[in-house]
Image (cartoon, rainbow, N blue to C red):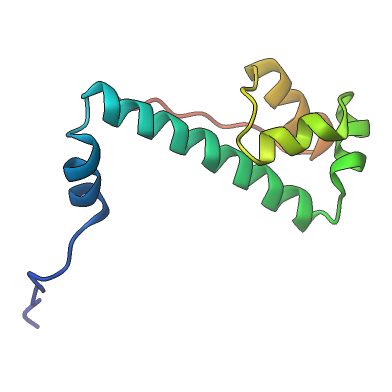
Length: 102
């Protein structure tokens, strides 16, 4: 079966290249970093909701407060790796798996 391509489709990378520059350009790297922080907040929120936990309950389990959990989920706060691990391990009962891309 021959695969056809639609030349009218614009990829996300093409949109980002046009708006922020190619990967490696400071403006693009800043966008990528902010997106990963946003993504982390969404992943934590989805895990918390899947477990049927409120922000307050999660905060109590991992020794922080509700407003800090809210700020992380809404990408309004930087998070230390040790705090992230505590939230995932103690609060959500999960494990953190990291990858590095060069």
